[in-house]
Image: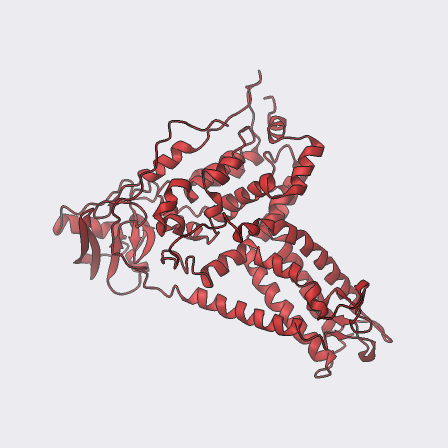
Length: 271
Length: 259
């Protein structure tokens, strides 16, 4: 390491110019935090309600369907609805099966670079918007516990890939309706679109881009990783879009499955 | 031609306040044109740093209606109706009027560990186009320091200036870390001395960059991931041990003899 020893000390202090006010912005800088808070709060409330209501999360053979909510897949408790249970499951789990798995997708989104930007701004006001004073007397960023745990993002990314594979399997299985045979229903399309959006969200992740090829010193020395990096880089540029689309659609998928399972609507068979 | 009101902050380290100037605005003019007109007609002592008037020197960085912008690249007709507020960059100490002391950035520049290439082979060094293109984006930086100005880590917390390099230097670190001929491993330095962990990815630096450099996505986050490789990823650590492969060796592999 060849650090320079001639670097002079930074001198703190000095009088700053301009008025001492939180911001001089006159545009609607508050709009983006308000929208973020509204959507994320609505999602947290809905997903919490859904996780603690282990009913109607699976539309099974009785309805001639095989649709499972993404909040409950894989269903790992012995209390899971008939037909929805995964090959491996826990005996005697007293709580909702969703609580066994939701930590992984939740952790993936919580440590996601895009969501970090959004909730640091909207909920923590650190800062609420660019050139608007943050609302904290001191600031240590992500250098200390608990925020240093954001560095675990890539592990949640790995777990997210497993979940994506399972949800893709669920979507493929849904095309075979029990007692009817192979066919396409609105539910199969909903599950397929949900899995697709989740794949796009995961593959556009910054950790994915880094692991694909971003970490190499020389692209020339790692041509396959360079190709992978080039594939995921355009996706990465749309990470924000995939983050919101997949978040909203996963909740809509849960709503759809619940409506079908409860008999409120019929899952229309297209062909 | 219309008249427009500019509220310009006037003052120095002993204090200051806004002064209002009503001046004419012609089609296509930028804020710097009006500042020059005010200097020529009403306030010859109004201090304003500028040079190229083409968005390439970065000298005229200030805050317009509360947002860091280049005075020479901000067209008046793109601003909302009403008085236009012009203030100096908030993060740096004031010298006078719109001129600030940006020497904090020079101190941070001095700390950057330099490129350390391996011994030159007889055939000379050779870089390939893929690797040249990767760092090209970072070399567009004009050092206007607006990214430093808007970064809340030092804008709102003066005490962090001693151990936080800021977005402008994170792109410099990224450029060096992604250089195929570089053998310096700065990851510890970036974490401990440059304060990368203070950045919470709010992307304001990217929003204000006049060169549209994707500072957060292409420099800061890749650096954060490299720090994770070195410090927070036991799988990566195990992989390195098993393969006995160091970054230096990887860099050596990129050195190709010239044809």
